[in-house]
Image (cartoon, rainbow, N blue to C red):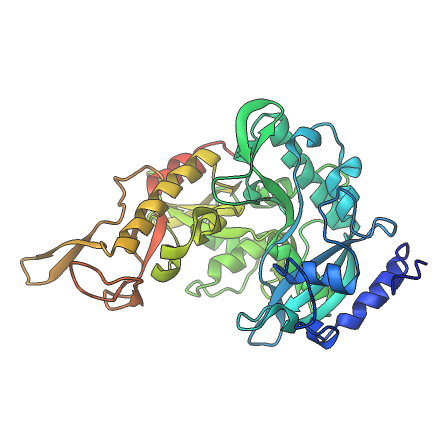
Length: 467
């Protein structure tokens, strides 16, 4: 053991034992922040590395404690009203080297060499506190369970395959399940070369998705988990997509009532969670359980009802946006961009003679070029809000009702997305960052981004039929 250090650099047990002394404490209980001279106080992780573990932060290819095969990660969490904890964000790991990944296999990859075993330090993020005063809640070592590792290996191979195809610039977190490729770097910068294309690609890093980090937190904090697992093993080469599709296929062409009857379910057809519970039942998951693989992968489930001509009855809405937040955010930190980086699972029902018939299901994430189209919608919307130019004109209809017309991008703006109200009524409003010039109001009816129903039909429902 190195006598200069308070732990054995070659022993995971020794490092963990020393790290555990941080639990339920803050750095201010170990060090006087007034006396500490640290040039870079940019993150709690760097402070813990420098002050507590006595080594200089670095970007080496090896694990932080290379002799013990242990990588240190310090990451924030938030406390919910029910006193449980959730991750504040995805867990960012090491940078993806596009020039090297094509010559690696999973077990010799830079990802695996660095991240096979993680020493995780979770701290409670409280905006008003200084770094030294953040309370460290949990400390533990995480080694990937065999089942999760099979999925993570497939995710890594998926990332590698896109680089091999010369499409590193098209990488998305929605390509994969647990292991993502998240953007990493400043706005417009950090572009990198790739081996099989002349196109520069945005720098990305391996990351564990927020849903998977939540699973880690729940596990190490001994929170009871009500999971239903889709498949026990992926050793045979079967994928999550195939398993899910096969379970739904047997019900293709059947009405909602027939499916409920065949599965002998007792469901309330009028309940808001009816389709969510029906999806679980088809997959063999109890209604009071979470679909483990979906939860860990942050998959967004959408049920779409199609008219007889296969056009969705409605455009597809996302959550309402906050005008003030929207006016300050950059594209790659925006709420809508992060939503579109998710993997989606669509369940399509179609009306036929007043009955809803299950037509198909599909895993999907938005293609790169379509994301750029949504960016145009977001950019125009943000500009309108920033300038206080939401309302273009106000007209009075024949009944004397005032109708407001906005400068937000509508369906004619592009073929992918648009902006329109998503509120109970016109009085259901959110505050504005600047006063609207025409109406002189400081708040406006809640709006959100929508995917055009023709886009959903042509680019999701009809395109690339599932295997």
